[in-house]
Figure 1 (cartoon, helix red, strand yellow):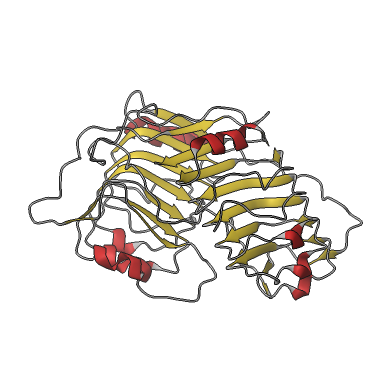
Figure 2 (cartoon, rainbow, N blue to C red; figure 1 turned 60 degrees about the vertical axis):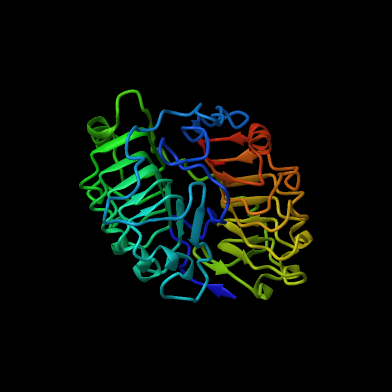
Length: 400
């Protein structure tokens, strides 16, 4: 099945999420002897994945002091340190209305864990967060809707606010005053009017490929809000597209097309000009894709129910994003020929333990972003990134 015009600037990308153990960023966020300061790093791209990722246990930038107290007298704390609640993730899900995963936070003023809000349908999905004032961990907004009204009482995030693929405008964070880190990727903001009250960024500000944000706007915002000594890394260059591959290919589809199950419309194609979303894949449904060599758009793997992807054994190139969400099992079979992708995105790795199933992948033309959680080890992730030639930046957010 093809859907037209559904692939926006953020694509249908990864940065999917699963509940996995995490240490909230910043002192006061974690209890029970957890290390202060979440591990994080941004590495320059180029040659062999370039740059280093920071280790765990306080080797990252220092997080802001204070703010580690329980909620105010009239407030109510919910959750536990190290907890992650993830909602959304499947942008093709037809379900609407409040997310049941968040209902236990209704009436809470302080959440002790981390929230991943992924490709939400609208503000009603997070209606249970309307009383939330503080998050002890981090807040990840992936491809958020323009209206985040239920977050209008949020004033403090002791970890990071990580925003990926946001639209040109964002409403609902007008009360936010303090964050440990502000990380922005591939978003449409032209300015920071969506954060009018933000006065303090304690540990890091990172911006990557936000084409509408000028260097002057970034520097002005950072200068007046980022603490002295904090990590600041602002790079918004957008790489040029390479020449079209394989002009002689059997080309199917149009830019902006989105292929979802069933994939029979792609039978016989060697090049697909749109994007493909493999969601809740079961054995046998992928055979129409067996002739594919190039995908111009994105390829998203979301919550597979099989490890057999041998129908994609001829796939060599993904022009835009190769996105992985909530993979079930330690690895997959069938991607042995995939050698080049435009961008690499991994958020909440599910049961993934290694990248041995991508033996030929050596080139990431633009950038790589990974939000890592158990059981994927930092060693496995670093080993994988170190063998890649990454043309842009590499960013890793570590949830241990």
